[in-house]
Image 1 (cartoon, rainbow, N blue to C red):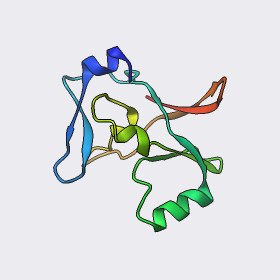
Image 2: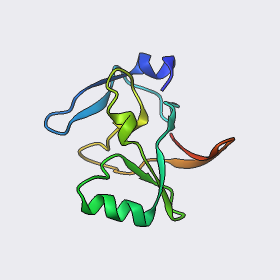
Image 3: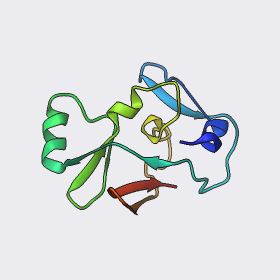
Image 4: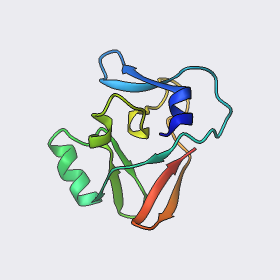
Length: 110
């Protein structure tokens, strides 16, 4: 989340669910907020972490890998996509797309 995302989103306590992202104002559909960053892990590692009670900040790519954004979510001084949650009602899906990067594959959310 760069300067544009920080102008649109606050990170604050989310009523018993840790910290989350909250829009400062209404945004246009498909507003770009940033790239999901995290540790690239296998689905097997994800299962192990979930069994230990971890895995709250994971985005699955659908091809046998996942990104664990736990480390980014601990930094509450800035917005990252790890702070986003689904709405309490309605759609619980995000529009994910793979992004080729010099260091490998990333995940974008729109």
